[in-house]
Image 1: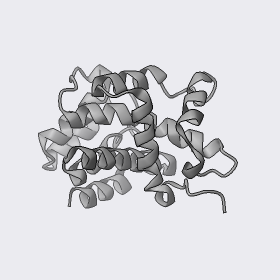
Image 2: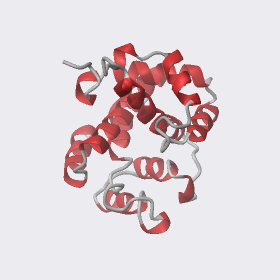
Image 3: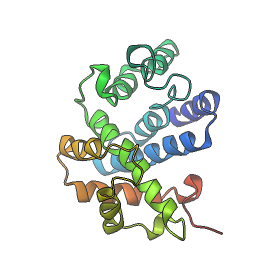
Image 4: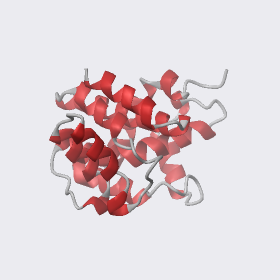
Length: 189
């Protein structure tokens, strides 16, 4: 139920196909971790879909933009505080500390989901099924690769989850493999 409403908002607010795919990737990662922890995978997936809802219209405007505008819209439309707080907490500048498992997991998988996707897209096959831990770690060392993705956020996310970075990477790869078709990562035809 959460997912259906979140997908409708995603279609309404986000036009960029790449940003939509990013939100789907983060949602897949969050659902995967929710299942591992026995949490509500529908709710966690919805947070992934909604976390960058306002980014296209209001990119990083600190107090006046992302994620504040999106969260204000969500609150006005009945979304619970658990969802809103998680979304706020993924922006370091929001002032909302990450406390819950959902908040910490969103932060941990956000940049990493994008990074793993980028690794898949530069493979000759363009397939997530050809991505492994070694290929992700190798690309992390290459500062010119996907330079907009903050490696420090990825490392900090793993630390906040109390999870070894390699394990986090492997779990995100597994999550994205489960959604390869939707993410455009099933391989070149």
